[in-house]
Length: 116
Image 1: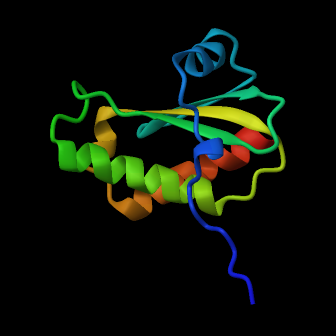
Image 2: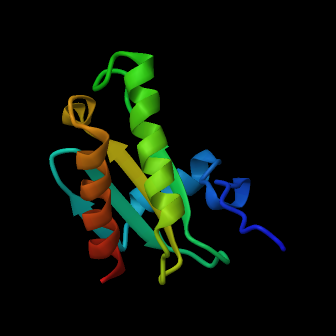
């Protein structure tokens, strides 16, 4: 019995600067709250892709930046996107003090808003 592939594979990521720049230049969707700003742009790829930006000036400690990125990746991986979008998630400073559950709920609201 084959197991489902639950990895966050390379083809599910934005990896090139130009890919990020295209989303920043002309976002088709935008959602924002106290923890994150999410920008989305329709793409021609076979699946939704994610780019994460957690600035050191907003969240100084590396282990906190890594925690926020892990929560974003896991939330993205579990959500089933109907629209094929390139998404960029920008973390805000308040994400540092939020619990993982608060961040998950925030991201779920963003994903629903972006999909509508």
